[in-house]
Image (tube, rainbow, N blue to C red; front, side, top):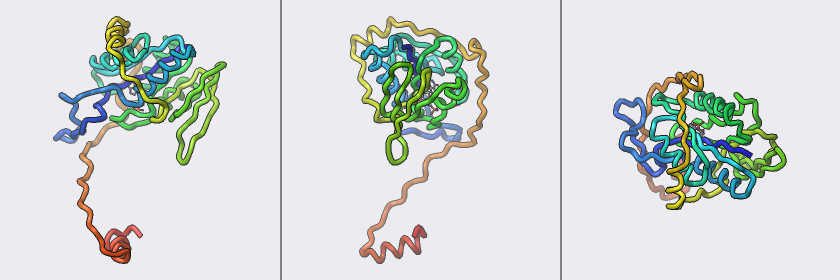
Length: 249
Ligand code: AMP
């Protein structure tokens, strides 16, 4: 069974994101970038399936600027076999990523594509679903457990108020949620080995995909400053404030 894993390069989750002065986006110059955390979970799951003998090959795909190759190298050091870099300096919105992935799927014929449930920079939570739609494949989103056997996948999904297990036919698109696993750190020998693994480079033009943005960002602003709280002496005072000052009851 062949797996394709999508890994996005995003601002590291530990970094305090700053909005650009002209409100056109967030500052990315000289900012630490890492693999999207949900994609680390996707890679980890794929590697575990490989170690269990369920998967035979894992291909990691990243799309964007040249430095996406660092993200692919991380995936290779974690245990993926080879990488594909779809290189572009242009903005990529989820629909464009889904279309590019659909083309790679045509070339690679994987049995399962594993993505993160969302990228922590745009918080779109769209790419996996759009990819499944474009391919006409089954989808298991927000996975907290995946069992693959006999051309089928049982995917346990994190939904409001509980868990839902769906049985889907392969080929399928699966997106990962936080509790699926705890990603490993790549060991030094594996980081060294990853340097020798192959990363193929291709452009959106070569794949014949129009990546023109469909959405325009009007502006990006800082969240409003949190105001300091106050202490109330009695429950009656609290109720009075909630009712007459804040207007929430
Ligand atoms: P989103 O729909 O933008 O929240 O992203 C969901 C998932 O799609 C991510 O967790 C990645 O697995 C994948 N993805 C989105 N953008 C890219 C990209 N530029 N390169 C590789 N994978 C991506």
